[in-house]
Image: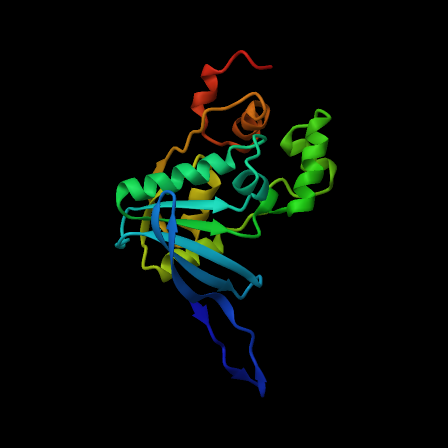
Length: 219
């Protein structure tokens, strides 16, 4: 939803909120989606929601996916992001309806691509993902989910089944007026390259990752 504040004191007021700009069909390897493009007037970012089927208003299967170039596009094994995106899109099409809100500007938990690469370089030297951000003087997690809530509201979604292991996403949606009826785990089998990263997310960022308990052979 976008607010247009009109003219105040002879000057055009800045627009706020999210504005739906375009709706285009997007056939994918997972099934057909509608790619609905938005402009976030508050941050100047372009956003997209991938919608499959007729959403309805309640208990909509939903993924808020933070942009991750290295994982989503390059197949990085440093994180599980690419696999989570693929799993979410498969789940939505299997369900018959749902939405994946792809959140640009969330790279590296909001520190940007170069910040993330710098943090990854420090992790290669032995710091964990939290320590690396702190060492660089960057926030541990700078993401904001207000735009995601605005997009869901524009789509007519009142309540969701949220595919996420991150309790902060649930808290943020509720804070912005979207009811979360269920948090659906999105658990990806770990590998040797990401097990330390995933354990840090569980131990220091409170992500719900119970499947890591079964992995004991990687240090």
